[in-house]
Length: 401
Ligand SMILES: *Cc1c(COP(=O)(O)O)cnc(C)c1O
Image (cartoon, rainbow, N blue to C red; front, side, top):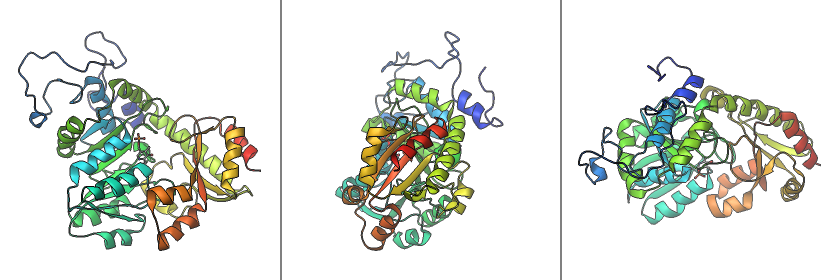
């Protein structure tokens, strides 16, 4: 009743059974939810996280917890990683990776348009700590090569990236990073492990916001990092135990339940997103549609080689976006006007250019021109959910007048 081997199992089987087993005490088929913060031990165990090893028994939930461990094992199987580590949120995971691997005098190369929290953390917090940060368009390999220095310790990609859905070539960037002995970290939240396995393409660490596709239902926040046993073990000791951004076992349990249907959901997200993207592309009031699955996407060919599924994120541009946003808030029946993404419910939100450029990205010159060329005054970021695509299209028709 426990998988004897995970090697020859398909992704649907692993999403359901991977990492979990019936409770040995009760025989319960559902993984047990262990909310205990502490554990009764029958031998002396060191109080220091520096003495943690993979066979240390459960001691304290900030170190490790039986429910969270099952989530981590399931995630590692889906990402084809040796190990994975869960955090309280995607930002807790991202901040942990950057703080644990970058020190004063080190240099980071990072996407110049990405998740605003990550962009602001790199630009404000890391630079305050003496880390040099160079944001570049990571979809252009030459820009990354030009940005590399002797002290570059990390290259950070987000692919597809927020909100332009730029695709970066993970395999090619891995070669550039490794030539300089820098780590390649990929935030793969928009892709999910169903679309892309960055470790197999050469990345050293993969970061996810579990709050999005992996949990999938908008009811639990979480984050994770996947990679080699050595990197993840070190991260547990330093970042989880000492920075303390530990996930609630209840959220880990909810996210694990969501993961069981991840492959099925991603199939439907992609199918609905393609239907919506084609509808938008043909609509007279829509000026531009960005979706990696459309032939018109600037990196469609790369997306085809790097993504097994084009995911459910569609961005589009209209004239007078603020007026359209107002109509959305008043008229939408099925789609929620709300931030976040990757839920079964459809979510749409206007990402205003002025706002993002002023607070998160600070682009100028050619990079600002490129951003404006794609996004105009603002892009609607549409996380296409699992409703009937005809109902989503009907909802959009009612506001695109
Ligand atoms: C949401 C998101 C994050 C942050 O995750 P939280 O769980 O909200 O902290 C990081 N990266 C990307 C690409 C995201 O979409």
